[in-house]
Length: 442
Image 1 (tube, helix red, strand yellow):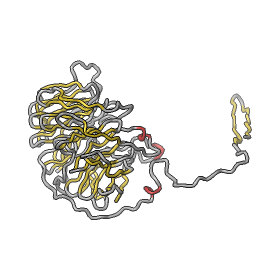
Image 2 (cartoon, rainbow, N blue to C red; image 1 turned 30 degrees about the vertical axis):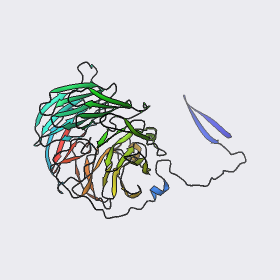
Image 3 (cartoon, rainbow, N blue to C red; image 1 turned 180 degrees about the horizontal axis):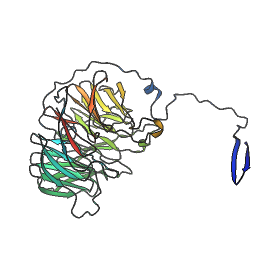
Image 4 (cartoon, rainbow, N blue to C red; image 1 turned 90 degrees about the vertical axis):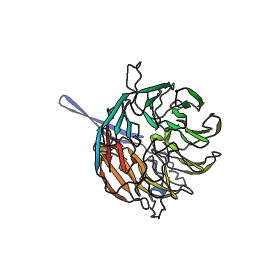
């Protein structure tokens, strides 16, 4: 190694100039290894050179749905194909309370019944809004014993007269859906930031410490619990249970997926969804980011760091694995599966083997100049409604795509930017904004 430093004296100031600093190899040539070259920023060379296909798809008939009772539609987290008009215009806007701040975030999607839309703001306030945009009631679910009042996260589900809220304060709170009156509270011993699931007389909740709860809906008493491996790290929100027939599927922050009998809690099978995307910091997070989706004999599960798997519901055996993460709902339809992956792409996968049919890059940063890019754009969805895929984004746009080709069909503005997945009921699209507004379009 050679180098020289020149010091120049000029008046009272000293200017130090480094002339050269060189590191010279000591007689050995570089060895070039053979094998596949991978981009350390998260995409393989195959992804970079990928060519989209336009493939026809046979979608289910669009049907008007009167409600949206759980995240992604229902307790199995699948709703086939809601009807929705083409040229959407604003219908109403109503405040739901506190929007996003530096410490607190909105994590709950709107929940809809034929008579009301229910929302949860960033400060654990539940608001019921009428179908014409008027506030019906407001209820804070912050514990009276909590002095800090600074936990956010949670979700909602509704079944008849009971609206259930989970909170970052580590509680499940049952409210009267008509009046907002509190029915009961149950301590979860850990933040309950994933959305709850209600089937029959039980509510199912996944807490952030890796424990599954089955709670009696009428009384709040614990029917049974199941424990997974305690997590090392996870993120606010998290995935909730999917329940259908004789299966309750629980996703845990460690990447474990557990199937149990819904009534008694007896474990049926468990597996672990693992895998990382090279070059991404989020690869260190093993959390399941996407609610499990039960579609017939299959269960779809996606994690935060680069894997989507399809499992046989009866055994937990893996049908296929895609090297793509999923940060929101996985949407099976026809012969395809649609999702937004962990690096900000909208994808269409082949439902038979998980291969990518097309991929569309979504904008990554709010700042245009690369040197100033620091604020990532969050994308919520996709949902399939009215024959197109819809993605709501925090940059203030609702984008609509052709499911056959991935082409952008149209977009319109969301004042304030999205903070929730879009949901559809009665030919109306709803979304919650970062400012704490419920917007309706029809």
